[in-house]
Length: 67
Image (cartoon, rainbow, N blue to C red; front, side, top):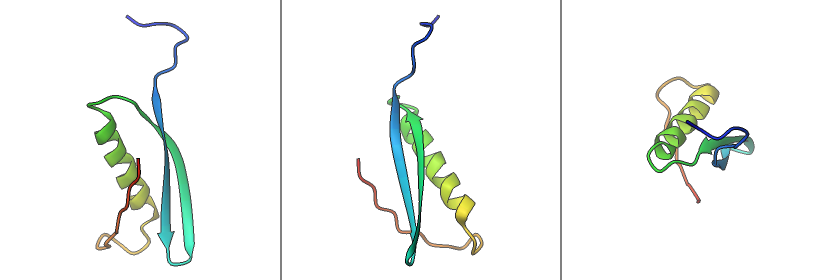
């Protein structure tokens, strides 16, 4: 059962990837759910990093987050 015309609560996310002087921003939304949000966040960050990786699989990233 559900409610028609009701939008789910979403968390806006901005991911900024810096590579030297260049940077790229990715904007998306993640479902606001105590169990699913951490997994969804991990998957979307991984996919974003994997999608811009020009140097192969053996790359190290430094991550910094802010909520």
